[in-house]
Length: 236
Image (cartoon, rainbow, N blue to C red; front, side, top):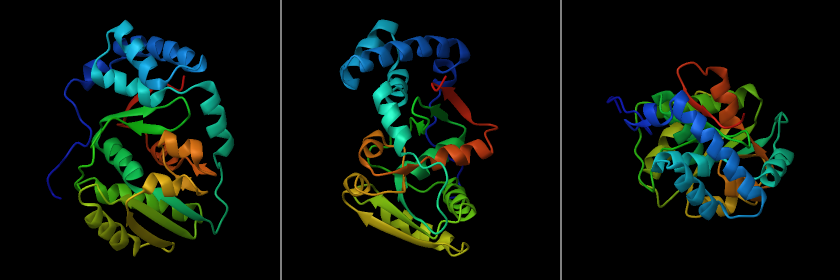
């Protein structure tokens, strides 16, 4: 893991998400939000909006991940836990949470989404390997949970994703330096399991819409030290 890797980096991102390009993206985001509020599905509406503004594939992906209808935003906000009750057990969407922090530490594009979450454009599609940012990402998660007096953290990792077992082992090794109890489970149906739980840590929209309650942990972590991060802000 000594080689320096920029998770989620694409050479054209500086141009496609420059301040000038972001002006167009914000117009497109407002149009997409309007269509979603009228009941259109995200796939068709984002394709229509992307075609209208002649957006690149990366820009279209950013829109689809960052924009939500007012109703979805309201429902997610209602279930968000602002302050963790001391002694709580949290359930972590492992790849979703760790990869976003790896992207942040790499200086690659981060999205401040309309629902308040932080998402990325890494798009690993089932392939994952530990990089030089992985230990720091895991450590920041555990440190923040310890600061908020969580008693137990359970990481859930998707078994079909490559190197899920290696990531599990690394989480357990790093957790030995912290006081909270840590478990790491490699399972097939992470989304299905998390969708039934409370105190969920994830930015996955499908999980947030179904779970009992959730914690916006990556937002809190990235706000602690936002310098050097490549933000594209749709929350405006």
